[in-house]
Image (tube, rainbow, N blue to C red; front, side, top):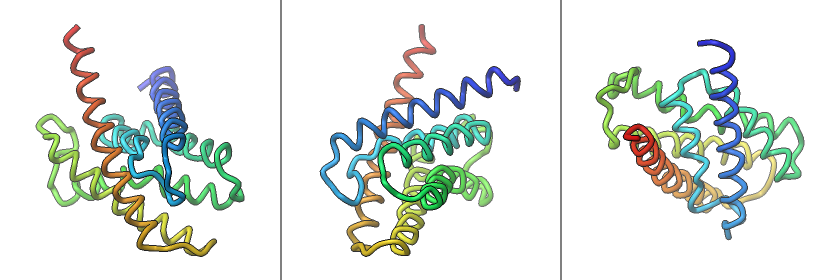
Length: 172
């Protein structure tokens, strides 16, 4: 892969995550997160479609939204950015490791991607809960359920829309 494609993929992932985060936080009514977190789909798209190539754009977008939309210290934002940007990759490679899906994704069904979304949602909600628990008082159950439901619903709908849009573009 040449540097131009690398930069293009990472820029697309960065902008898509940043814009969807801005839109999602604007419509969210929960103080613990969103019940419909569309940017989780970008995490899964980056891991499943683009692989490790898109990690930099995903990490930098997490870092940017942490700096622009929160008042946390930079070290907490770095940790949360690392957690958020890596959970889709971890879920994907765990399923590859256990041979539940094929790494080249030629015969992967949407149900397999839903399992990746579910696993990454669980990992992300638990890891974020541990980070936030160490820095503030919060209701773990409400926090985890909000993150889990929001990541799963937003990731599922977002990935489905991505597939439909990409199929329409391929047909033209």
